[in-house]
Image 1 (cartoon, rainbow, N blue to C red):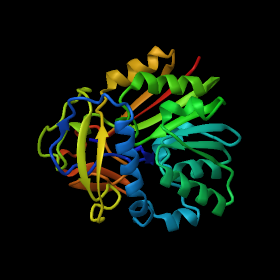
Image 2 (cartoon, rainbow, N blue to C red):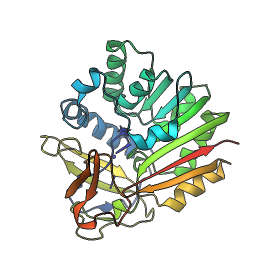
Image 3 (cartoon, rainbow, N blue to C red):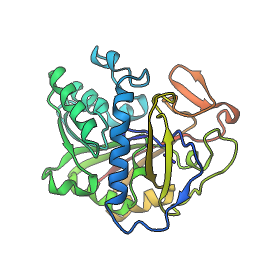
Image 4 (cartoon, helix red, strand yellow):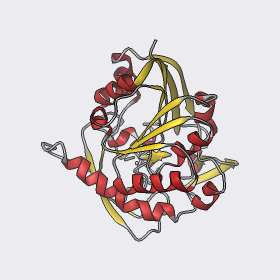
Length: 294
């Protein structure tokens, strides 16, 4: 169930937040390109609705608002003059927000429509970010550079079947003194049905999940429909993948709120902080970690 959401400009998509049917576990995914083709079409199909949504507030962004949230900015610190690789950047709001802070940013996303918009925004705002359209597993074919920071956030890893390959990409593109900053929706969230009435999904990675979504997390009333394929990844899987690449976990935090109002049946208990109303502060909705290479 997922989207960084993360690809989440918020990276992008956030998530597979609006699941509208019961999942069916795919019996086979023999063609490694099948899920990429499905998800690329899925993300392309969302772009127009996202650009027109209040959720992304494109007008406010163009007028100088940052799309970054305090969870990630506190981990990122001062990025002026630093090189940043932003994985799964959607149409680039977070990438461009980082560029506004003086970073040298390269954003990567599977959706060609999203990357086209990101490039247009970069030119319109007179920024110097670079954007690459590819699946992140294929990034070494497109990029030969190491970065001070690799960054990804909110609804990103659920689109990836293999976290060992993901962690290998992170390690490859980090400088020897670099750091990895990761903010993601908590895997506990993806166990529930859309209305948080009961457990509907496995906490652990039990294989690919194929679903159909009506609307989109950014505009649930949007007149669009798309299929997608996703995976649930438990915390142990995340940590094991990163540690296998000799990345050192310097900090790990869990948060009892989401900075995005992207779930059903939420309450805003503080400005810009949302919880599932029935659960109050009893469950984590987001986690964040920082890793270093040495």
